[in-house]
Image (cartoon, rainbow, N blue to C red; front, side, top):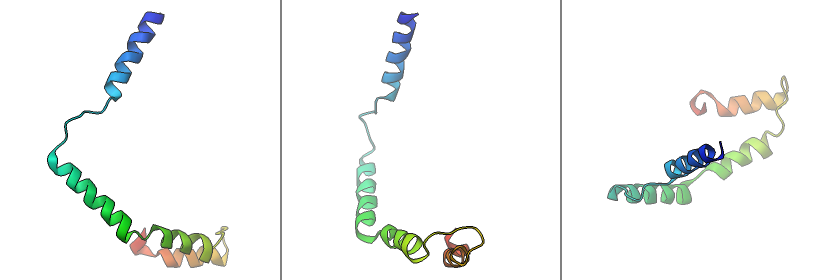
Length: 76
């Protein structure tokens, strides 16, 4: 039984290893995505709006309605 578990574990570890070969364009694309994230990210502003401006959103409260209006159909 221990031998079988060891073999299964080895197979899982081998399957989880990343492949070393990548398409040359992939690293350029990843660099562009990271640059966009670093230079133009709005996540901190969105977190501030949702957490600090609208605060707790308990069901049936004005804060829930205000947060829902802020999110609107275009942000869902």
